[in-house]
Image 1 (tube, rainbow, N blue to C red):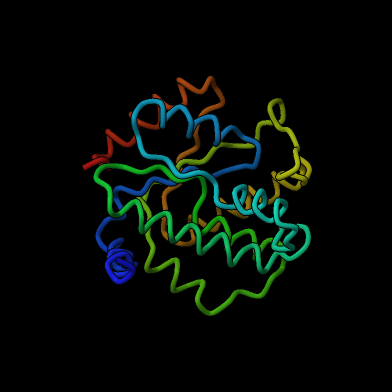
Image 2: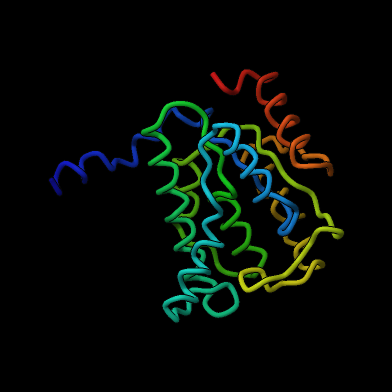
Length: 200
């Protein structure tokens, strides 16, 4: 049984599947999680933000792979989890939405001044998402900090600007999601995808 499971888990499954992998990115605290939940309610597969998952786990076990303690380890783990999410999504039919992805982690590392690791570029090249990426802009009125998001709004905005540039540098087209209610945001996103025939 172990051998069978290992054979199924093949990173190469993502090849040729990029059009089905849709990224939600953008400013921290800009409403991504709410939008992802709305898309899930409408029947789409959705993957939570790896970073927030990792923070919860590290706090639970007393680990130090946290953005404010050991950012390098945190980046490595979140990239690995992003890759895992893509491989699992490749096994399922239809579109999957992701709350952040590999480029988000790499951009965060660069913004913090960390030296890029040689395998970062390989990860970006081999694990591609749909060329159209959707970004929530900074939205001060709804921004909140919590146990997993400890940075302030100004830092979130600075990270956002660097992030959007990173996606552009890697050949993605970034579409900004309007500041409106979550239902209208979901409608906008799905209409944009449909117009670009990205769901085929």
